[in-house]
Length: 166
Length: 157
Image 1 (cartoon, rainbow over the protein chains, first blue to last red):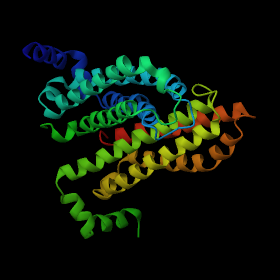
Image 2 (cartoon, each protein chain N blue to C red):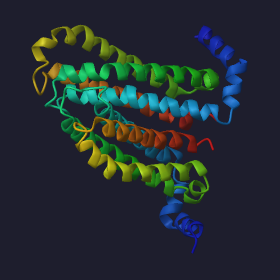
Image 3 (cartoon, chains in turn purple, orange):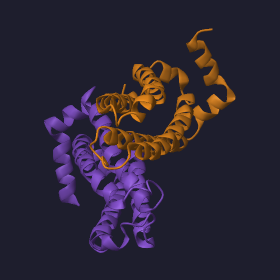
Image 4 (cartoon, chains in turn brown, red):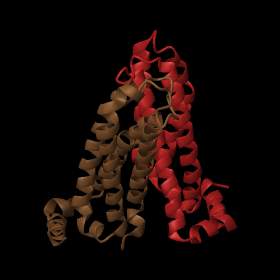
């Protein structure tokens, strides 16, 4: 943990971190871009999840929804993680001291595990379930789990300024 | 009575005072509903407009994609507006004096009016007039994502 703390201190004290933290416009713009990235990553993923859960877009073939939105979801995640890293650069020490920040990463890891389970265990057998309007229970469960976990990630992120010492 | 006087009155009603004096986690819970609603709304806007631009689900009928998107857009908008109203009522005078809040409200009004009028008409005929469809898609994206950006900046102004 102390290596992480040293790294955070290095970022916090760097010229760039300090400038971003104290900037009038750059910091809010990075925050705003983080939100826009979220709309594409978590937001479009929620639409895929709702299709997996058999709730939305039932008439559209599941695989075409999945494949059509995937590049935008991935681009959204790149933007979200890049802007997230910039925000960490500016606030690193304060974030490490905030319990909800660690909670957010626990939810991200769980969402990642759910994604791996879907990719490695369910997706290879897609030909068996992909053409049903409502997919089998395991696929629906993966969709709902993703939807709930990513919502918790967004919510714990929004709570950061409310639960940190200021 | 000026707008500011009305907002001062709203702020000092029992409800306004109760909201302002409530635990800061009450305000935080409104913010949680607000951001979830907003992410849903923006995702729906992205889905609808990616389809209109022919960048996603181009082989599927746009009317079906737009209908599904509109349901999500409606749910997201209702959640964001209801929670947003409560957030506003917790400090109406302060919000009214924030220029980014006013810009956000202006963009939000423009986005809702545009989506319900011109966008609705043009997107129905997007198959015959793809260029017009693309133009309204880009305007819609700029308006709604603009609302999001200005919303996020309010707290820093």
